[in-house]
Amino acid sequence: MYSRIIDARLELEKTEEFTRMANESTVFKERFALVDKPSDYYTIVAFLDLFEYVFRLNEIQMMDEMVWKRWKVLIETIMTIPKFRIIWTKTKESHPDKKFRDFIDSLFIQK
Image (tube, rainbow, N blue to C red):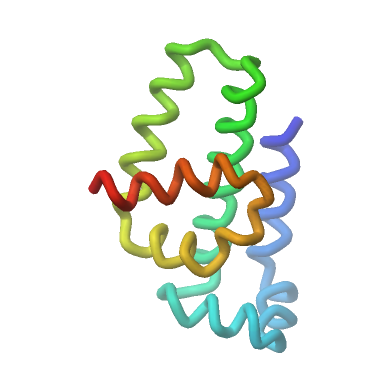
């Protein structure tokens, strides 16, 4: 269900109408300036939200350990992308789970 919510959000955000309205926001303008185009920002944020959801599933033991290990490697790999790191740094406080924030931040130390 959560993946459908993320998909719906991403589809709405990628519309011309939303991007035009978002450009009226100083917050969005600042964040769009960090990437090549608004759709890059939307995609990165959707990934970060998905990572948080998968992290939570693991935390509450709703995910098989082997599946989590695969996701963890994927998260570690994707977080080596500079734009992901930049957007994370700017938006991480919007993620309420401190354990998740600490997990992602720990990847910066490792790489």
